[in-house]
Image (cartoon, rainbow, N blue to C red; front, top):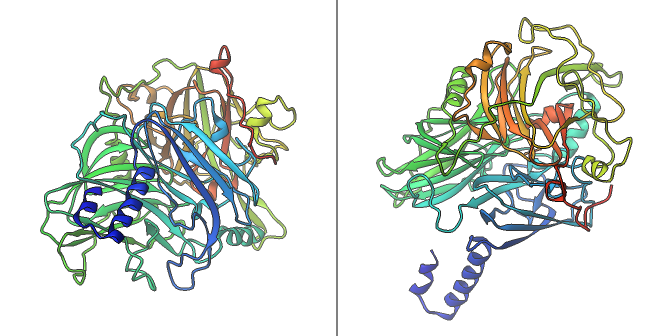
Length: 568
Ligand code: C2O
């Protein structure tokens, strides 16, 4: 691309070239190095639909800037908060070995960055390459505060798939024509979920199917016969999404920054928090084709069912041609969801092995429950709640990692139970019985021995309603060794686990009325959040933290905190 600079020699052009080269040096990966970024959190009007309100942004951009790094790099992001809300940023999927200080979830690993203050997230990118993303990790601010992270393989290491001609990020999001924090507050007072979003977006743009959005369409120009790598990220708050391109099939090559055995599909399913890299060959008649995304929801719960579009545009085709839409699975297509997820397998080659723990030291079984609690001041006299093993997680006032590191007492308890208080037919007929979820005064978290192997079965229940829940674990990747519909059978199901090439990821969907089993080795000391990545459910308490103990000696222990760590 920089080559285009030499085609002209007017001084104005040379100046522009210098600026371009400077930007390229700043944003494109070179050798392993320190990559520095400045994030200014500020409120800006970046109107996307009619009557749009100003939003919280990073550097005035929506989505925010992409972080480029190479495997082995050190990344330093100085975040300065100019907005009226407290802020913290999470680097979703970065393992942050011994370095929870840079992980970001507010009140879990750090106190928020208050208005007018700065904090530098300083971390190494070790043993990971691929697509991840960053987002605000406090309240609902990630609705507009998010961006892509692109980690290139080490210099000279090619991708384990055909080299694409061009790469592009496609960040899928949800847009509200409102200040989401106000919306959340109003909902809270009434005991109701905030309104569903007004639009979905692709790279911050809803596409031409929405009013007042003509100019807000993302287009990717492609050349006939060439192959493109699309880095797709689901940054939506509450919606699992289908994505497809009219007339084209996609080859899935990577999920959550881990290579997979390639397979071809017309549509992908991607849950909030997840990333999916696909190769697409521009092998159709030159034309304009819609890329489209829309919600998957297989229970009767109100969701934003509007379709966002972008354009896969062959070079030279005039903009006047109206593209056609891809055929996405129907919005409630459970069988597509199950069969799509079954196709995901780790690449598992000598270079990229799947190191699945074969022996398990600690077995955990967590039930996912939704419910309602009495609320005399709410419109319906109740408010929604959610729980794991019947416990609704209560947020602490001090960050758990600090409390752990400095041995502060009274901030959390480490007695989170390994299984629910009673077993029942989890996914049977709708369970109206209120199991009375408990909320302790301080958070209860689960303590894990350093380097032990953990198996966690997440079991959906029909308390209030079954629903699909994308669970995200901070600080780790895990292997998805098994999944099924109905109740997990501790005798029969483990026999069917895939311990050879299960998908390795950081966020996994627990199927509606089903279960998912994951395994990981607890080799990263610290306090690590795990939660449903539907912001609605996180807010209701569908979350927990793991305290992974220090290992033997300082090199296996949590690093000392940085000097500028925010105070509560
Ligand atoms: Cu992407 Cu705890 O979040």
